[in-house]
Image (cartoon, rainbow over all chains, first blue to last red):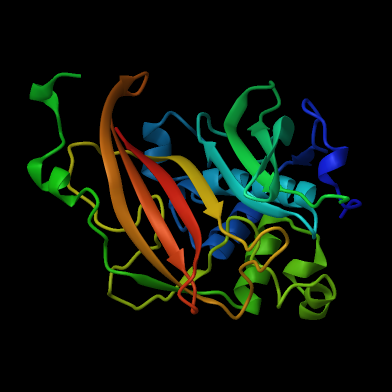
Length: 145
Length: 167
């Protein structure tokens, strides 16, 4: 993990180091097992619902993208920081073997209840730049005091 | 949307705010590692107890978005808490999409305890509300669920707000 970020170091508009991933089918199978989400939508190409949705391949778990956003904000908070909240909406589908970029930007800094809070816009976006999974997060950061 | 076409029944309305039977989630070394691996985490605190303790944690850290594995009992039909947790209702829509996931954590500020392997968490899900909408997918029912996660010491450690779309 990168060096610890302190509240004083953070500026509005600051971008988080993005994560780039191209999950293949085996990654989705691992995630099915790791998360306990065994919906065949994510690993069985012949699952009838895919055809009904006009798709010929499985789709990436929304929760997989959510977990990547979690990875992003956890790395930003560091060991001395704490993730307070992170949430996303699943607006669009992502397909296996296509690059997904997970990013974030600082939207606000505030002190509340003795905590140094940083609000973020976060997202997963596809190769065309479409934010398929937008959301927000709040982390508490340590202060240099 | 018109009232005449609503799929929200009186039974559904009566279920809003009613807590479903609690489920127990175990958080252990192996399931934390398994989840971390399936996400692609590379930080040793999600895999190695000594590495986690060296960073000041009680044990292997539950990766973000992981609140344990529900205890599975064959034939019980019990699912995981969260977006689909708790009670379901028969509606005339065949397709289901996860609309959104939002976790709120309650660590002791500023760098206090977090959920670690060894914790046992009780998850209680309730339906927070129903909404109907019409979009590119046609008419849809949006169900918002709220799950409260309480640890073995009786402390609420997380809340989850989930959105399920049926259309």
